[in-house]
Amino acid sequence: MLHETDGSWAVALKAAAGDLPIRETRSLERWLPQFQASPASILAIAAPRGCDAVRFARLLEASAQLQRKFPDMCFVVLLAEEDRDLATTAYEAGAAWVQIGRWRLDPLIRLVRRRQAQFPDLAAETPIDSIWRSLPWGEHPE
Image (cartoon, rainbow, N blue to C red; front, side, top):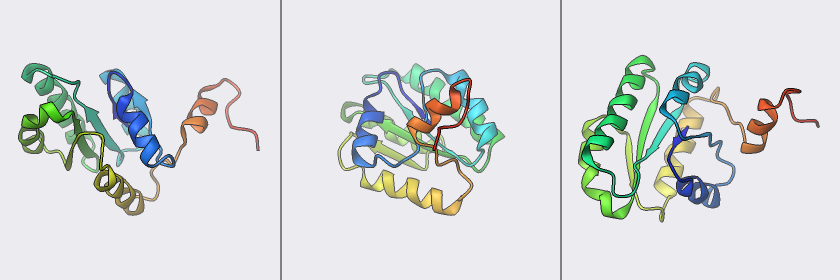
């Protein structure tokens, strides 16, 4: 699950590893149903560029509440280079990884792949499968 406001992290992650099952959301309210369906998923929160401390604290608190409800969840924070000073706060809030900048995504991708291996029941849905699943007629035709 990737929470961001502009889609730039999703583009970078898809370019680096297009086979990763990424579900994007722009609203905090959409987190809960996704984690009810797959409680060991990864939540990646992209702090908006130039994020103020109050807004960042709200994002971290919402993710901490979700982590208490779903203890198998993995929490990752994605930061722009100019916001690197927020990394310590993210780790203190329970982040398993903090990615600074959209280059050298290999460590983050390895973390996701290890997580998929550890929890093989995690949804491995591609973006196209997600779109088909949301249509009224359901599954993608073979």
